[in-house]
Image (cartoon, rainbow, N blue to C red; front, side):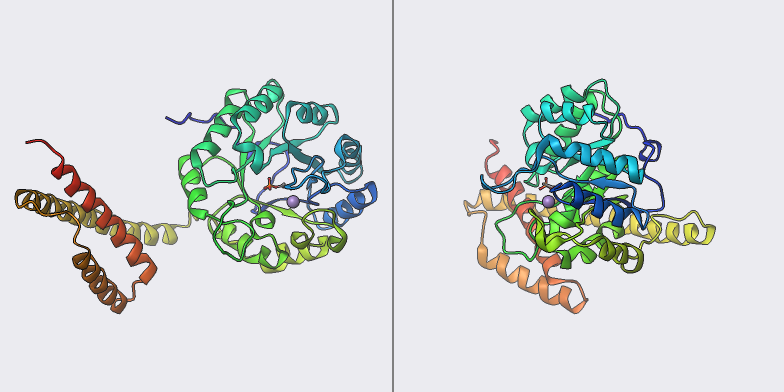
Length: 365
Ligand code: PEP
Ligand code: MN
C-alpha cells in the first residue's frame, strides 16, 4: 500500500510560476565557467529562471567525461548571483547532497540510474532530512512504477515535502526512434495516483535528439504536465555529453515561445463545464454498460469452462480464437476502430476468459 504523500504545492516553492510550462533549462554538464555563464545568460534573456547543469555525470563507460565535480558548484553560484536564477543539479550520494547544501543550491534532482536503487535513495533521503530544498525524482530506467513511488516515499518520509517528478522515459530493447521509450502510460498512472505531485517531462533524454523536442514537449503539455526540463548549451556541437539532444538558448526560446501550443489544463467557464459534464455523463453510462457486458461475457466463459471440463476438453482452441479475432478486426475496422486497439483489447478479454476457464478446470468439486 503506497504512502499518501505530504506535499507543499509547487507554486509555494518560491520559484516556479504559472502559466505552464514551468521550465528548467541548462546544459547536460557543466564544462567550464565560460560555458555555464554564456548558456545562463542566453536563457535568462528570455525569462528562464531555473537553471540546471550536471556536475557529477553518470556515464555508461568509464573514461567518458564524468563531470567537473564540486569545482563547478561555484560557477552555478555565479549564475545564481548574477542572473538571479535558481540553480539545480543531480545528486547521487550523501556526499553530493552535502556539497550542494554547502554551495547553496536551490534544488536537486535524482537521476534515473539512482531512483531504482533503494540503498542510494535512502542515503540521499537521510542526507536531505531537516533541509527544505525541493527534490525532483526522475523515473527509474525500467518502467517500474512501484520503484518510482518507493523512491518518492523515501524522500517524503525523510521530510522532503517540496517534492516533484521528472519523466524521462525508459530504457528499451525495442527499435524505436527515441533514445528512451516515452512510456506515457506509466506517467499517466502516477499522475492519477498523485494528482498534486508536480510533474515535469524531460524531452531531451526521452528523445535523445533535439529534433524530437517539439513533439515530445507538446505531448507532455497535452497530457497536462506542469513543466519541462530541457537541455540547452551555448555550443551544442562541442558539448562534452549529450551533444545531439541539446539546443541553443535561442532555439529554446523559439520552441517555447512560438512552437509549443499550451492549452488550458481545465476551464471553469460555465458553458464549457455544462457541455463537458454532459459528454462525461454519456461516457459514464456507456462505461457502465461495457462493464455489465463484460461481466455477462465472463459468466458465459465460466459456463463454457464448466462444459469443457465435464467433457474433458482442453481450454484453448486456437482456431476458434483466430477466427473470432479476425471477425472482430473486420467488423471493428468497418466501424473505424483502430486495429492495434482492438487487438490489445480482445487479447486482454481472451486472456481473462482463459484464466477463468482454467480456474474452473482446477477447482475441486
Ligand atoms: C541528466 O539529466 O543529465 C541525466 C543524466 O538524466 P537521466 O538521469 O534522465 O539519464
Ligand atoms: Mn544529459
